[in-house]
Image 1 (cartoon, rainbow, N blue to C red):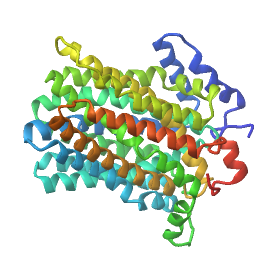
Image 2 (cartoon, helix red, strand yellow):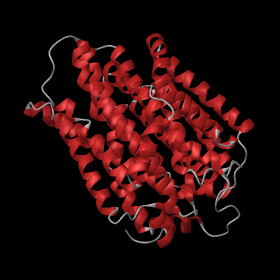
Image 3 (spheres, rainbow, N blue to C red):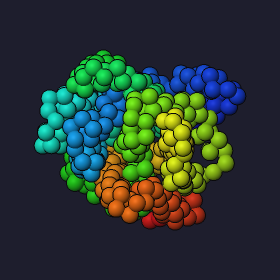
Length: 446
């Protein structure tokens, strides 16, 4: 096409490549990112701001929830891992979310997801009993099952010619939330954990109102269709190329989840305070803000999407190597160095993978039932997180009995490398490249 979906000319498209390289220092890169933000249409911009708000609302609570349950309530680490993992599992299990978005529109599902997130966060404030926590975790997972596929499908449809750039910007917005959310949660959690939960409720309610007023309606790809819902699922589940790709990314979600689960617990073990937690999330956020757009442009210039993702998965796995080294001797700041190094390397790997992964899923959908494809991917990612948490918890137990502290991190390293090897096999001959998918059709086997 000669014109972008937002009506801008080819000159604007060239800017998406040039601008990330506009500066050599962090603040100039951020200015370039802001300029890139302005090249997108209003719906995409609202979705970007939405991502900032939802991430803040979630990460005001999530990093401190595990610490609260383990150290204040006294729950076992493995039980907390299961409770938190159930959120992601239920997010994928409620596969109907993306299908409903494809049929009744993306905006209603985005708003419904925010309302349910508010209810789930409110439930975390009301009780600390296991059944109540499980219910709250599952409810927030169902909320994400409605919100996430609709959000991503809306963006993929609205910016169909610039999907990788759009999801790179999406990732930047998440990093802003990653920076602001935990910082905003620190003073609140010191007052009362329930205050953190209720503040998150207020954020999600405000976002729901903003979406109702500012986000234009967007019909789903199956709007008005009279075919049964199960036909949409069958289409996605019979796409061997998509299933092969999604299965290879299965383990990667267990690695990403360590940013809000394993690493915060390790920070608490090493430093016993909130300063290390703040540093953990600041490193992840600043790297994303300063380097996400430029890194994706750099990867696009050198590699195919599949090659970039393989390398990103390797980086994600290798990120746990610093935690496997002999512990450093010194004060809390010195002992935090391996954890912060792990967070930084893991963030870089995630930055390399996420935009290409989201664009590849939309390309594999080939313009059909995009929301359903994202829902199926969420299902597999939920299995990956629960599986990763159980394996990590088992490895943690064995590490104590075997006096081998590095065992959990060795398991995560192995998961990352296995995922990279599997993706390399699926992408043999560049079968996940947009041109190859367009030529062969999304239903072709890998």
